[in-house]
Image (cartoon, rainbow, N blue to C red; front, side, top):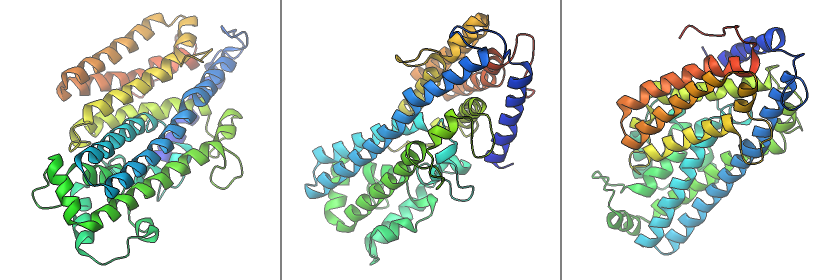
Length: 362
């Protein structure tokens, strides 16, 4: 089943439970109804965390393009190191932002924006070989490497993976990751710099689509997605709280089902750092930021779900321990347990009166 259709069905079900079982007349710590407090928590998370992440992602994509330009002006190991660090920064922010794969990130069912940033997210396929072929062919080719060329490339050839390959290995059959060899490769192949610049510019475009969708104009409606979200007027009729929580649950599900830590960011050796940032984002969602007045955990606590909070925190700690040990055999069951928490304990704690059991059978 298409992920967007599945999300719509699930969020509709959760919205039903909110309206029928969610204690709309009970008071909350914020002074209004419990339902009001839940929507406040989701709005604050969007304003304090999600939207700032879209800004950071654009800023870091631009920083990578600038580092690439500096490197290609003076091709040396120092400037290469700047490119590589800029990629790491951008990748970490993506692993935070990717938790929110809805709205501007996933508006097009055929060519969703996220796919042109993170090709692995589409179907769990590592397209390293595809990107390597493109790079080697274009180094030897004669195509004009302008924006039209990069705009026409499929999702399998662009995004973070393409920029990682360009930044962390040589283009020859040996694919050396030694910095000195990468520098020599660029010095010997002038068109490789054109490819690097073009890929960086392409990623900025897609990052800006997400930013503008949230803050300026969603899908040519003339209205920011933030407004639609806060006004509970999403384009597919889904409940915004359910959309947010279920999207994060899908993300955790994806991280373990696709074994993301074993198949992505391997050239940069940044896979475990990326995973850590993903879990950072889960914690921010639940605990809030320094500007938060109502968090999802505080709502759960006020409703008497302290034991459930402890269960979630224990599973997050288990994920952290697996990341520290860099042990995927420990990571996957810990992620599965956390995935289950989002399907049950968290939904119950913020939306459903005690005693109501919402579960998908896991």
